[in-house]
Image (cartoon, rainbow, N blue to C red; front, side):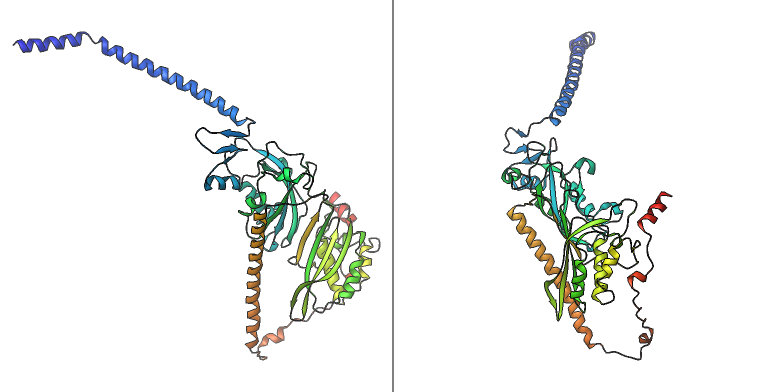
Length: 441
């Protein structure tokens, strides 16, 4: 009885005095609200600090308890992974400097629809270059912001070992460099600690495109308009061509002439067709096939019109075959006597190479390791194409065991070779003046 009374009294006392529990809950809720308010304040301060840090001009941030350094937006430190990120140009992009750079580009044009990406056909050399530049985080923004320019705009199938482009690239230097000097004036300072542009880009470019070197350039530089001269080479087999007649005709191109009859006319955009040819040589190359000699036409000029080299080469081939006289060059260069271009096919594009572009004071550089890797790559590609040549040569030898059956009707379907029509007797294209009138109308 007494135990029951004591239990009931305890229960009554606990129900009559709930104040301590309520006070505890209220206290906890108050502290929770205080913590939430504090978190909001801290988040706001963190956002402000992050914004200030993104605009900070500091070039180095040392982290406590870590030997790595954030330098120019690239994490540098010990360890293979960090060094690889640095070499490839990746890292925290909180701040990045830039500099104006010229790149010397080599490409084998067989599979490309020309150099320029404006052709709206893929792939192009320029398109592959910009993919590599974006992948390595070397560029930011569009081409206008990059002040991009190119020296030559080679056509579909045409190759180059000396194309030059210019644009702003990310840099390891402390300040954006738009006042670069040419290499040679201060080459050690200019390249010291800089990104190895050649190595970084060649790691991600396809095998038929390579960067040969880079050079710091001043802001006023233009790969197109600062170029003093360009050199093209055209490879061909001598065969039965009359090289003496071709050399005589080639000399007639020297000097400044109106080359509207030796180009694909673009009357909408080009109004001056005068160009200066500095030199024109026809020389042997160090390659023979049985009794045939590989030859080169080497043409140097201040600038060239659209398809100009291939048109000049095509006419020289006609002269070498004895189908035209060397004097036809004089007649085609005389715009008063020949105001309209005769219709004739251009020379094939594959043997044409943009060999070099000349600039005042421009010297391209790369590291010794990078140059060695570049040479090894080019040697591998050269051996690969020689292997393909050996396979075709083997097929040629193997075809000698195939017997000829004159009873097969295919010999009666041979087409007669068309007789040559002299150039000046052929149908002509519209003259420049006629094209302009048509465009204005």
